Length: 112
Length: 115
Image: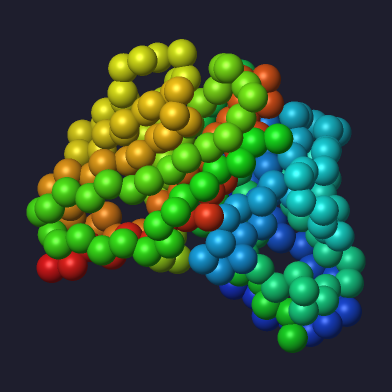
């Protein structure tokens, strides 16, 4: 399995709370990604990064924000969670120029 | 923009038998990659097999093989000698060469291997 870790794996929080989903990889990959996946549905890219201090929005609009201060770390933050944010969030990474993406185990977020 | 379609939301197969999962895609790109990813219940998504569009030979990884038909924009996955551990969601995905590994995923096929 790939060396990419997400915490928390499962989180239930109240509406209006601020949350940060952590993602770390120990493979030295330059590129990192966040995908959102509703249960039983396809994945949609919401954020990606080419390297330190690089962040871009993906195909699916998201109210979340990301930062990339260190190569190995790519946290995702929701300033004020809403029930519509309930979903699974998958972090991934790849080498620059490579074509294989490695995924973390995902963070299941439920906003009540 | 690319689209990936998996027309089989759910499939089942008996252990030790062979099953084929379908995937079609639409793109105007000529150079791209195609992937099959496996997502077991509550576990990490892992790459099963990858195909470069410029290669005519179908990719094979042990019990997993693909039937890549570029003209038809079809990319099916064949699992031979199915095992209980193959039970998972399977996602077909597309990435253009110049898209920096941005994957476009299909809707997934839930495969159940029955003992």
